[in-house]
Length: 373
Image 1 (cartoon, rainbow, N blue to C red):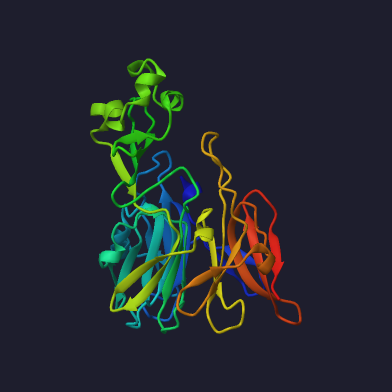
Image 2: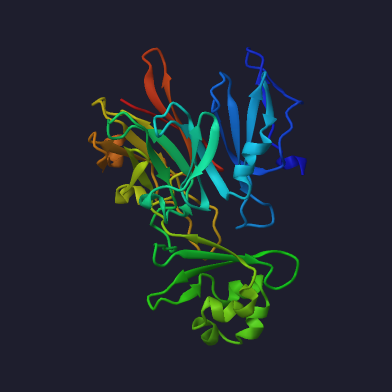
């Protein structure tokens, strides 16, 4: 559908934008756009992420790369093959994390591990990562770059679901998703599973909700008692054959220390940063001590009845000691109370005194403005 095509609008220099009709984008249900001169030829190229395949949640979407050729964006067919079926990408950033004078591409997404594409003189290749980079599949929302430990290279801050929800995950017992047209009615079903204390994989949703989605469950398990002790394998049985499987190993929001030479170390953000999903991150020196601090925010209100909404987030400033050790400020200390359904935020300078101001954009709500002293 053309409704899923990205559009390019050109600024005429006076703040008037006109659609570039020559831009032929792929029809992708996207999320993030990251622009940079990745091939070093002096103009801006564009990575456009694929967020999902409509009607097929859980299946890997494809992303694309557009080269700037004489002021016109054209699909780089060969490089874009790297991003075929890469996953449900939510955010992307270009940065020279390995300090080889080329901009590398970092991607995060839902049901995706943290992903890097190394750039070698304009040629991208997927980086398998060191040991710390494995088992990082999460529900990642946001990635931001900043030098948090003052060693001169780029570290990363990555917002995830957080730990204040019924969903739990670990390397040993990942949170799982199975998707397929299990009941043969022409639409794809999604079935979530978690490991109980006995190591058995059980469904997240109960008999009533599950049977509304897949009526054969009510026929197979005639009462709640029978369903209560059934594992996902018991429920789906041979219907699991051919199903797509996704896993999450971690829900923590983190910062990633760049130790150089391709070595990365993952650090969990403080517990107060885990009480809600993080959708927006602003790195800056809030207290003027020379160290990069963080502002993080995010909630998620639009959930089904049996899963409570995430609304504990109020916006949080994390003070950095210069070594990547963060201390959360209270609402009284920071003066920030961003308690709505935050999705993004920007830091701007306002007024003749160039006062720092945070503007928070909220889903289905007004923007909030916080002036910093």
